[in-house]
Length: 208
Image 1 (cartoon, helix red, strand yellow):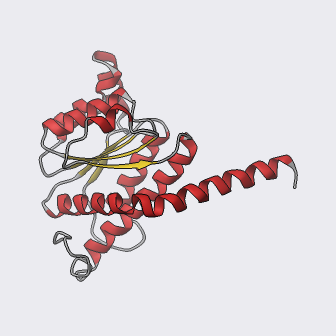
Image 2: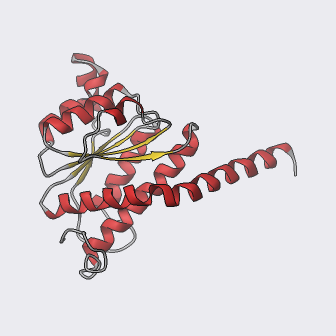
């Protein structure tokens, strides 16, 4: 095996090991986050998502799976990524500050029955910190998908909020787990929406 293939093998091994670790560590918080989202959707709320760079792609990935479909046919679900409107993003960044690109949208669109799903591998992004604060002022619950030590974003979460923190300092590995978290959330939401008996088999789940 040449040096390139060895490096590839190492990356796969690191990714697999972290995901195996996260399966037990993060399952409770992922399940709680899914229930919070199902409750929001059942109350005619919506899920707003945001992130920067690769995390912006995660936010868009999640919202597209809900608004369109995941793996099974079901009704459309109310989800919106706050990362996609170039005119809105650039006007806010130009007229105010880049740290406000999500917060201003949340203050305009967020409602108490809504959930904010924020992605940040470091928890240090000023616009994610501001987004969480804006969501809290609107009475929204917050789900933070983070990494490292959670950063300032994690420290400002309230008791009703949920953090799904990947125990890694490597951005790429954190993002790989974030993608799996997205698929877990989508799958659980689908189960609640599609299967009327799913909640009965999972005590504490809200009705859909």
